[in-house]
Length: 455
Image 1 (cartoon, helix red, strand yellow):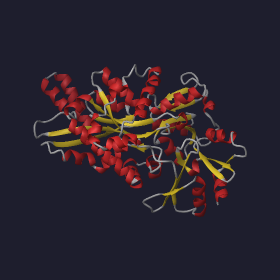
Image 2 (image 1 turned 90 degrees about the vertical axis):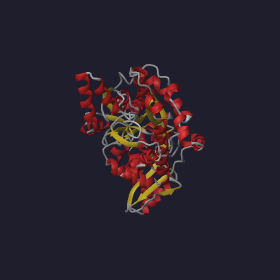
Image 3 (image 1 turned 60 degrees about the horizontal axis):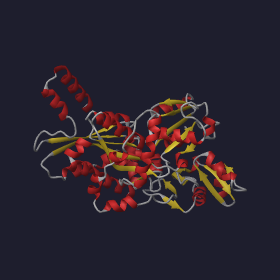
Image 4 (image 1 turned 180 degrees about the vertical axis):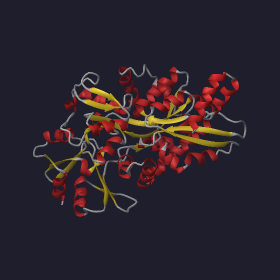
């Protein structure tokens, strides 16, 4: 309803050309005001199903922290927050550069496009905080159909691969193929599709593989509709999602942006303190299985949540520019000018320095049992398997970290290797084979065989 009314206003303004209607259109934007003591509308664009943005979107919205922070400003204004949900970052950028969204969250590659489009159209934006990140790149995964005969990236040559061009998942695909000696433009048939469309194409057999971002690979694996072919963490390059704000909005309403970042920090603290409850809240809001949400957002999940603009993430963003330029999606992007940490520093105060140097939690194996509000952690995957063997019923999900990359995955979807008494999990078959090739006596086993060996 919000967008329809604004479109109607825009058309009327064009038709009449009157200053009054142009002013009315402007007033729909988040930085507009109805005068001292009037209501200010703040519009936030988010991606509910891109669940490592939840501290600036889905979870934050459900907790109501932003609204509470705004009410606490005590500046004489009433505030209204409009939340607009999108599948990807591209439409958020389009709305921001049109002056219709004030604050948005998206992945690293879309963030660069956000920066480029904003500068090009005279609506500059700035990266003001981080939501979730993975220092090795594990948020993106390439998957195939469950019965696929493809076992490595080299098998993708000449195949149809679905991805969302301009997304972080596309960046992972391009980089991974290059390392495998395959030209991403000529060596495969790339299908530029929205995540849901690509998932359907994979199921229908019209795509041989799917390269996507959180939470699609985990969701499809959990549903038995896909299996992992390549773990993005093999690239060992950071990937993250972050919060971007319009420059004009930030300058006019710095206290509102700081309120948002304080609320984001509160949502981050809530998620880290109550990961199971947070997963349940996000699942309820999105329709995603809570077990999938926890795979990414759990205590030892693939994503680490921290609003700090860490130097290694900014450096990774600079490296991403060349990928987008090669794809002719952007020209040069001045990353240093795009990154603006003044607001998050002020919002977090003395805690910012500590967050800036904080490291992700160590990888660990976990079991989420039925009827419990917390998971059980194990010292090794072998110990977890022994527990599962002794407790075949009542387990919602079991998670294990890849033995080489640390990427968390579902225990029953992992590729298992037996090496003496050790039972080691891997996300993808290629990493399992790479381990076996350099460890004499090691062999790939089925999940059932791994459970039996641990019992």
